Length: 177
Image (cartoon, rainbow, N blue to C red):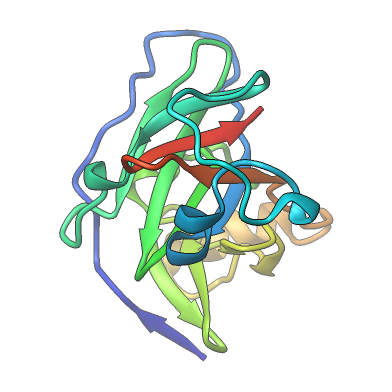
């Protein structure tokens, strides 16, 4: 059962670069990660840092994602990502749908069985924001999606890969690329 959280998010993504824009799917719980800082589960409670450690890239700030604009596009040169805020959780996902490479910056936030998810506005594919798992692959629930779904019905669903995301002590959002 899907529950629509918002209809459409106003944002844009630069498409001036001809290369394939690929990004990562990441997640975190804001409250717990803000107190943990960086480190693995073994290092829970490790010292918070002012700068990202090697391998982590700052992609934004928690204040960039507000209720009426919970999705923001970020161009990282070779990659492009979207930052997503769902309640008190933050996610970093691929900038484009895996089915038709449609930008997810205009996606709908939905809830599926109590889990935060994102629905591609073009083909209707729904991804779990925590795992990147495809919850619904190209549903045929309108005329355009029926056509697009027919084209993809023999293809295996492609999930979004997930990567770690962490918060800095001043609300910075870092992703391990």
